[in-house]
View 1 (cartoon, helix red, strand yellow):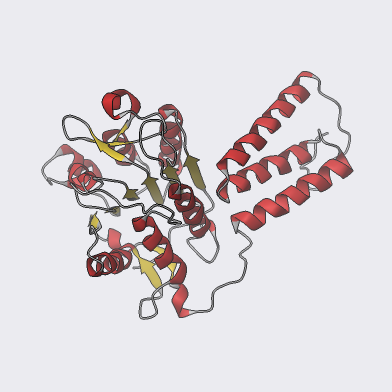
View 2 (cartoon, rainbow, N blue to C red; view 1 turned 90 degrees about the horizontal axis):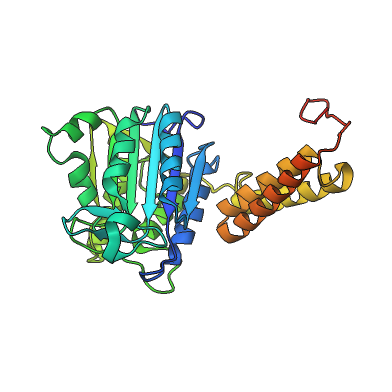
Length: 331
């Protein structure tokens, strides 16, 4: 039966690289991440409570840790999305790139897709969704579940394994200069945001793919690819927004949440003091929402300043006597 992911028991990890040392930059990737995070976390969208955004992270170990944490925690749906350059090594194996990825030394500087595949294979949840927006992303389908007699297929032949890619195995993805989003993610975001007037109540993975395929075929663009096991294509991503009035500013809108937590942090600093645990907690929430709103550089600056203050307070602790009635204060 068609349904949305369980918001508490599902996890999403959105990974993207927009700036590169040895490859052309893809500034639109930042908007891909922020808009998908908005859709996935909004109550009028997917409604997920747990969505990690990993933007322009150069440390492959950090990327891997985010993926493995989500794979260990997801009990219902694990959704992994990547946007950036996809490169092939000398053996034709797909690698996802980070800022320092060097095509000449790809085995040392890129993230082999086989590692992502292994994380998904070992995930706890029975439903796994992989969306790749990069060149040669169609190869992921072949590596993921190409031959039903292989070990990989045996690992992933469970209810709800679904892969959606921007291109076939030998085609580049498109990112027009100056565009808000990359071509594939832009169409995906528009579809999820606006819905389908003649579509079902919930936009399933299968429905999303069929709509994307029609759009790209009619425009003579590289066709997206998909592969799913069993009834995976019945899993829905969002309600169909075209069937009802769009909600005004959602309380989970990242930009609005960033503004509210900035005000909350300022108020708590004025009333409770800058070193109070509740002030620090509000600052941490502010930094998180700034990142989700599409400004990872500012979020990093806010987190660094918060870490410095917490380190200072840890070395020179002061007694805080005030405690809130709900027990969130420090005694």
